[in-house]
Amino acid sequence: MTVSINWEEIWERNIQDIASRTTVDYWESRAEDYSDMVLNSAFHHGEQIRQFCFSEGLADSESQVIDIGSGPGALTIPFARNVQSVTAIEPAAQMIQKLEENAKGENLMNIYPLQKTWQEVNTRQFEKSFDLVLCCHSLWHFPDIMVQLKRMDMVSRGYCCIAGGFGTSEDSAYLYKTLRIREMEFDQFHCLFNLLNSKGMRPNVTVLPYETHRSERSAISSMEQVVQKYRPLTSKDTEIIRDYVKSRLKDGIVSSNGLMGLLWWRVA
Amino acid sequence: MMDGKIDWEEIWEKIYDDRMTIMKRDYAVDDWTTRSQDYSESRRSNNYEYGNKVLEVLRKRHLVSSDSQVIEVGSGPGTFVIPFAPHVGHYTAVEPAKGMIERIRENANESGITNYTIIPKIWQEVDVSASREKFDLLLSSTVIWMFRDIMEQVKRMEEVCRGTCCIAAGFGSVSGPELDLWESIMGDIPYPQYPEYPYIYNILYQNGRVPNVEVISSSSIRTAERLRTMYKVFYSLYTDYTPEVEEKITRYLEDHSQDLPEGKRVFREYQTAVVWWNPKQRQAGSN
Image (cartoon, rainbow over the protein chains, first blue to last red):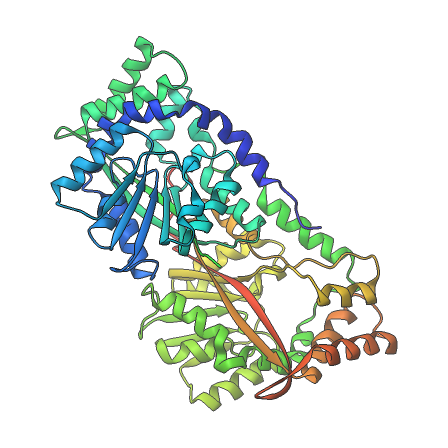
């Protein structure tokens, strides 16, 4: 009489469309605005996750870490400052370029970028090679989520930690509702939480606050590109986005606060 | 917020109702008096391993301090009272069963603990309006399955709490020999569900809370005789406790006793989800 819900199927059904629209080319075009956000935010969400991992014993100064979907280094850079090495998996060349610039800016020599999608990585080559596997804001690339999580388990000899938005940010929810973009409506955290529990993985859950700061240009560009995943940008879309950004602009910066949900477990 | 099609409180109520339909009668407070010795033995295993692990989860997040005012809903034999009391200012234990209250006093006395008060009531009878925001920490362990009106009781817990609410919840899944024993006694009747987790997480989340979770493992070591009491109470709720039923339980206990440093004992390992949240915090966009 327990309730049987097929969370794997719910995930796949909801993520398929988002994953197919969020191509490597999409991330190539997002490199500039995303890196702007990461730098203006002083790597805030990555540093929050880094501090949490150190305080919980998921990582320490000796750790070898892999960051799946590293982008311009939101997590890679804060971890690389504090651990032995970070292998950064990132398919978009522009993102890798930003990552390398950001690493060079801090004279970090312990980052090893691999320009591949996670699905292209030969996990056998990295079996039990890492103390910590990180995958933050990237899980929507994996409709076959359990296959990819098992591959993450395979390369870990310590912990896996996956992260994404917790609940919805009120502001962005309002914006995307106005723009009729539905991808934010699917609660990825909640589905993954139940999916992992239904598979007996019983993850720990940690909710962390984070803040983002970005330039006006970065804020507009990021939102316009999300819309363009779904349709050509109309003048009405542009107007809505610009009005929204303007209403939130303070000293040339758009700031927002939110919560991240971390699901983490020790690999058996 | 969540998948709008799922009403988690409705699911919780359905599981509760389904369990009741196969019970001859519901648990009575006196059942817990009968069970107080075996429960105490279980919770004392490995020097209160279970309670100490929950304490550690909260201490490392700085949610317990030497001046904390703590209240616990359903203290049983002192599962948390004994590990927590030395690290807090005062501990209020809500526990209605006379036998459990005696065990709390014995266990506290043995440990030299005096900074506690017992409220000898079921939680539903406690006047929460008289204790509004009086406590820094509210604890409850494997009790919530007794509450059909789960959010009503959670809101009452939150009302007395000015700091952190923490529910230690069981996964409730049963398999292997335990299930075989049930089937040998009860035949085709499905094993009754006492699932607290992850349902409680989904209910809190759906109600806009922001809960954290750490999953802990702990062991329970009991003599076969003490465990027999547990089975006697349990199976009496579902069927006539005949000599045939007793015989099956005896055989099961013989088969599952092992030689441990303490002597011949039944050893079990459980996982528990320690769920904690700030009762004042809400997700964005939640009421």
